[in-house]
Length: 115
Length: 113
Image: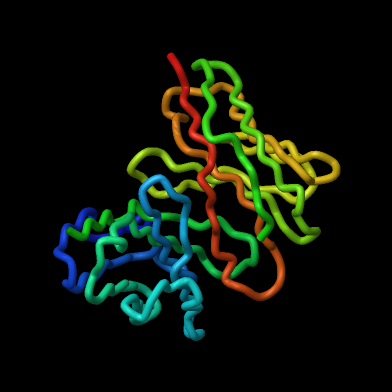
């Protein structure tokens, strides 16, 4: 596709359930980011993938959060045993990864609500 | 990344120039100033970035003071579609790293008809 896509666009789940959020980056982009944005707050970095390098997981808030990127393209963010404070918009972004200073292209986000 | 400070909100009349200020007094020599915006219910959108010199593209102009401690984003003819939250970020542009973006609360720009 032309841009970064994410699915689902909205997700409502019960506390304690696991959720999986999907990101399809722009074709050919080797760098992929996950962020989250809580209501009225700024953007919080979660994890970064670049090619075949080990991901930068420094932003993951707890061990309930994990992410994979299979085949260097699609990425899945998994939240286990969801808590109400996990409610937020989860944003994915990608860039080509070939240059240092590049625009990050964001997807529309997945709005997660944990009841 | 250097801390940035922006006013929480601003209004601008449609068709007029919108001037959005940002303070980044602790910016270091290798940090660029980036501007993104986020229209309601959408992902952030890149606008412009610069190091020392003023920059202009099809969306906006970026004016950086000589001491680099502050900058102003200028939307020359604001339209209703420019209503959004605008984020100013100071981030390193060289060296190894993931270059993740850290957004504060930004400035909510309301363009008034």
